Image (cartoon, rainbow, N blue to C red; front, side, top):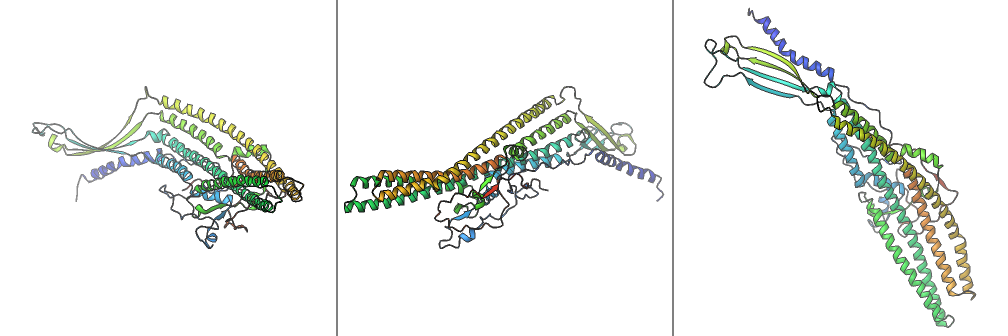
Length: 533
């Protein structure tokens, strides 16, 4: 128990722990705080919840297949599974935003950027090395008296890259990676907006084609009724045969137009329903806007719209974030100009007893290894990053100019569409219908010719078709204007859409909206969620 070497052994144990303590203190002093940037500006795409919930491992959480509002009510018909499902424009856009593959594919770019951010936040892996040195050649062992040598030594070393911690390389990489996530989020919102604008156009195309086809069917019924009346008059000897043939020709032309408009309606429906392929009931969706959606919009002044577009448009925000990301990437390359630096700490076991006659000994050591930046000081990557900053700045200026032009063009198109809709709706309800009714009455009294009747009916039909197209165009240009200003949806998401009073199975042309009813183009909306823990 009275070991004279006991205090020395205790000191030796403390010396063995010393390298680990030095390494821990060095890491604690050099590890930078985790980069916590300011939250990115809000992305506005109307009030649509674009980004689905995400799991911690980057996978989109499995959710139930979305269902169109009112789908259960439509299935209670006599032929369940075949009845059209009326859907409003806002409800359709929300369904597209949640399920469209192009939007979900754009989300994966965000997830890939998140993966790069996770990688940037990880500490570099240390290296572990083991060696056996100063060993004798085989057959020529060391001897403490006649053949001293060595002594053989066993080394165990731990190396750690210090340049990422000491020179700010890691913090710069973290900041650049997080800004890349922000930029991808903005690009994702811009891509989603493009899809939603296309879906809105397809929705309005169905409205236009449906109303035009309804008017064409009415024209066919009127033409056939006129042919029947003239044929009866010809049989009675009061109507000449050429007039009957002329009426039949007009009826054939009306049937041709009805067939063409029917095919256009089927094509428009197929195009629209393709956007809802991932929604339960999407294959039976029938556009049926609410009164609020059909109402004439009160559009703010152009200057106000331009100011809102600068803040709300996803493509402008994406370009702005790309510029911030490029500047941070330049800072990362400047930090990477520092040379690499590596710290080493290790322990050694010297086997001296056999080789030189002394007791075996333990020791430890530490060292630094670094590059001499005589030639490569990251000049090329710094020049490249500087060019990327200038390029991002020019791209931002270009996007801003394009956005202002798009808002001005959409504003002018919407004004023209509203004026055309009001004019054609008034003509369709008044002069055209009154002229047709009066000419038909005079024809029955024998004071007008059949050609005048056919011309009046054709003019009335053309005005009605144009009025239907103008009504759909007004709705389309309104949503185009809202999208150009950075928004798309017109109101909060309803809990459940209320089915319209009329059945969409045999849709009739919608009446033009009253001039007194109006809605306001949105200028602010809650932001969609961007970051996930």
